[in-house]
Amino acid sequence: MASRPKAGFGVPDTEIDPQHFIVEISQTGRELVTVTEDYGISGPKYDEQENGHVDQVVRCRIDPRRWRRVATLLRNAFNERLKSRKLPTGRWEVGKNRVHRLLGREMCVLLWAIERCDEEKIPAAINAWTGLRPEERWWLYAMAAHQSGRAADHDRGWRKAIQIGLTEGATMPDSGRSSLLDRL
Image 1 (cartoon, rainbow, N blue to C red):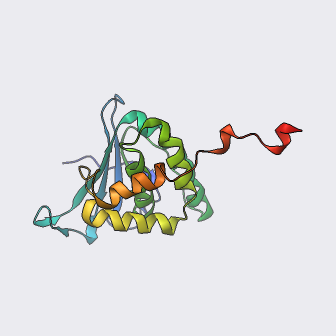
Image 2 (image 1 turned 90 degrees about the vertical axis):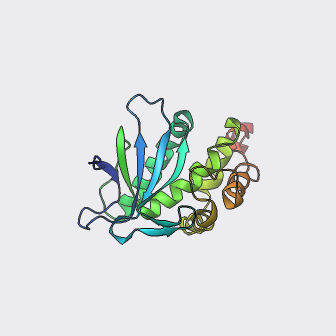
Image 3 (image 1 turned 60 degrees about the horizontal axis):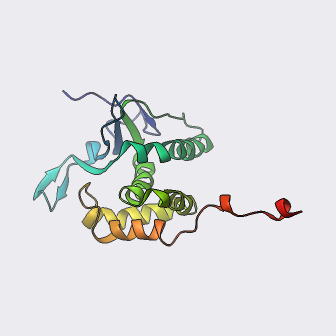
């Protein structure tokens, strides 16, 4: 029997097996961080690649070093949204962390953008991701998940477009620019 996720962000305890994402962080911190979409009681969904119905789909496997670069940002962004709705906040823990289905979709967009990019472009991707509204992130997720939403599909279709769009087209954060006050 698989261990039940114990921590998380916004997954209601009052619902029976809701659709959500699971972020699995290893004990050692050396293995890839795995993000899986669990369809819950609403699943299983038909999967063309599997030619059958599946309960879960692995959406992303990301290097732990890259994960650590965005984990705090994701935690803070998710907790801010949860607080605004008067819901309990979460934190990342070793093991399985449950994430609300909409927050998980937003998370996947950022992770897909940085999973294979040059590391010096990660700040640009973060900057671009924070500039998107949640609805825009959901739309990007929907476009990518349909044809290229599995962990191994990193160099195809909308997944490739997300990476290029958030890393190549984005401007770097303002840390290198001097402000008007600095010049006074």
